[in-house]
Image (cartoon, rainbow, N blue to C red; front, side, top):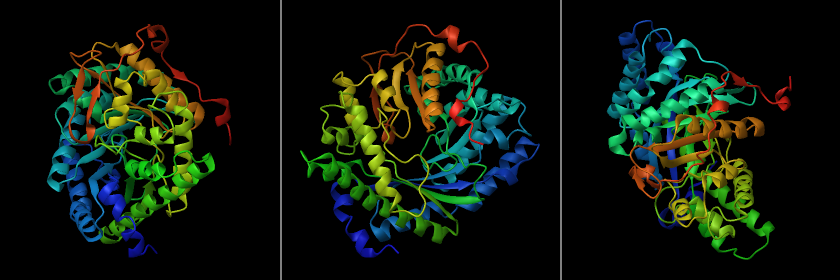
Length: 454
């Protein structure tokens, strides 16, 4: 049992160090909504989400007030729509109607985001998958709360390069469709390798087909708490450093466990997992880059950064796993640029480049996240960036992702403004040497030899 005394011990963390529960995400299966008629399908989706999630925001607010724990977002994830819409949708516009239904329903319920406008195409694409992918620019330009993810690779199947190449075009089309808002549509679109079924964080969240009918997943956060704890052990050995990270991660995770269990009980929905990820915000003092600085690097991107991030990631997991019944999702440290003021400062100082970020993704939770790039970047170059990140995930048997924003009409030296948790970002240069002959080959990069474990 988690005692109230343990909760009270976190008061300073909440009041002074930006500790929060970043999200309560209610996963909902839509498999029982499948219908051959688009209009009927949309009505079933709306009804199922409203029925299952009608009390989500109220329960989240009640827990927040009773325990004094900030819960930043209440979110929903659904079964990948590429599966749900397959029997009804004949055009990209049909899929876009589902996105609009999801958006209206999320607004009615009062949640911040709804994820699952997704397709799993790591080995191949069905006709429905292609239609959903083609609909993404329209869907994300005409909705405000819908989040989209496409899984293009896995350690078990390899990398679907046809999908990777197509997503290069789709990212550019989405950027142009939302050009009047600094191409904000691309902030709601992520391309993944080894996407987990139980991730509560957007934009990659969807309700996996291996899940039960509904489930509560919680994502905790605490870069500010971690930074403050590490300030007290400056100059100490790695042993002391690691022990401090583990102890701090355990305290943060216990808060997430409490919220998850309470939400599960009050909603009558099974508890799924706690995601241990250190997720930053644009707020000063709530930065993963600042934690890396406290570990000992001048700026994120300096020599030693990848090692420091590897240490942080592993120790966070070691501490968190002991404090929660079930751990899942991504769990580790996020390094988004636009959502982390310390990362932005590192870019502006010249310490952090795309290449260094790619190296860091080998040892952290996700990948190249929330990075603004020039609007005139070629689709083949974007596809090459995607392929590189998918390869890191495939070979290392970990989740990797890319969320890049080619900001229409802007170039290096300019700044993109997204607002809220999405923050702002300097436009970063990309390597412009050509990779089109590679990404245009077509077909699939085979799975690595170490995946043959049957």
